[in-house]
Image (cartoon, rainbow, N blue to C red):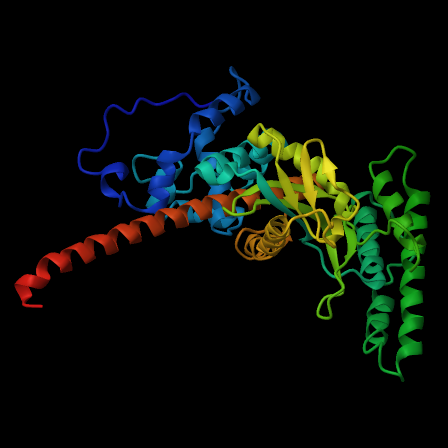
Length: 438
């Protein structure tokens, strides 16, 4: 149920955030620029109107989501810092300082699920709108990257040991008496698996690995036999059997028990050969620098991501892009609807020197998307995805783009204020120099 709107006619006589805070602070300016009312209209129907405890204000929850990816914080940290930061509170709609946490961190999880992908896309649309004319440029660059999932580096032994622990947990919950716990055996096998790459230890470690796999298979089969016909562990046991049966050359392998949809994507770099997560596509205005498209995919060929990415661009901006400049990984696409796809290749003889120079400049400018993706990863939580499942993959890349776009406009506010300050200072010195005798 939505919370009733409180009347704000009478406030503290001596303190108000609006009158007390620095009105030139970027967050203060941003709070007055965002069209909060559209979120109220879009998300209000998602709440029931007549029962349940009152929900938190929609502006508060949307503001916390933006601040989380703007400042690269966890759910717990953004809620904690909100209670300490006056600017955070004003950004989220507070007029008086509140020295307590606004909500439990888990309420952000429920809110993300409530508004869904369409709600996150609406916030992304607002982050583009607030950048003004810069977000309306028709020439865009495209590139793909990988957002890694929050899983440990997968090995067969790790997965098998996790299966053993899960089976023991199921047996405890269902009061199943196992023939053997393997507690002492597993401890001894762990010692034998150490230093597996040393020439003297390879055979012993390989034998221990096979033994751990055998124990995992025994426990899974024993649990399957002793569970009743109707049990809630059917999906888990199917997953365990699939992991135990996969080999080095198997397709669609499982790399994590809690995130089975994770893909192994080859990076090809010396320092990191593989990344475990999913592919993301980023669209970026070529000359002004606003992220105007962010989508998640499993692991397709780069060229196959363009159709869905351009469809999202059309939803967000209400028009088709003029040109998309991409690298050679998108080879095979030359035009989608009315959008021209530009990929580096030998120039056609009919092109004039001016047209060739213009295309060269566009290809050089496309490389600017690489550091943009780097900033989204380092500063806005795209490098490691902590959200659960495919839904988490989809929203994390969009939230990172939202954080980047809001950070960009805040930096513009800072530059504008700095420019005004230096102009005032320069004018002052020009007026005072004759009096000082210069």
